Length: 122
Image 1 (cartoon, rainbow, N blue to C red):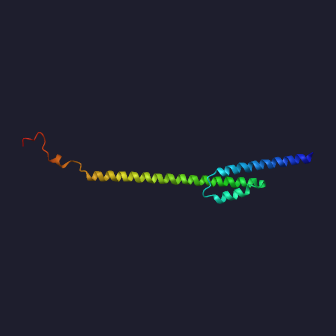
Image 2: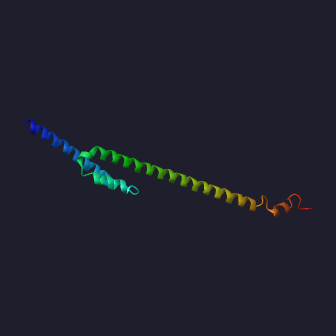
């Protein structure tokens, strides 16, 4: 009887490992892996070996972290570019306003020459 319980235990353990591998495979297929194809291929090649489940999980988590880091870097770059564009647009607006101010005199020159209503008789 002991022999069967040990076999049952080992079988259950193997079943758990296989389920973990299936879960990892499903998550791996759902990832956006552009730029990390070699890591993806390496992990997928290990998925057939239940004895390497812990190593595969470490590799998978590492890949997830790399992808998240790249995504955050992309967001940071996007924000920097957005801020540069906004600054450039503000500078262009200020520059346009400054040019318009320089072009237009403060007073119409004819207003300066017109006589006052009081002094019409003169």
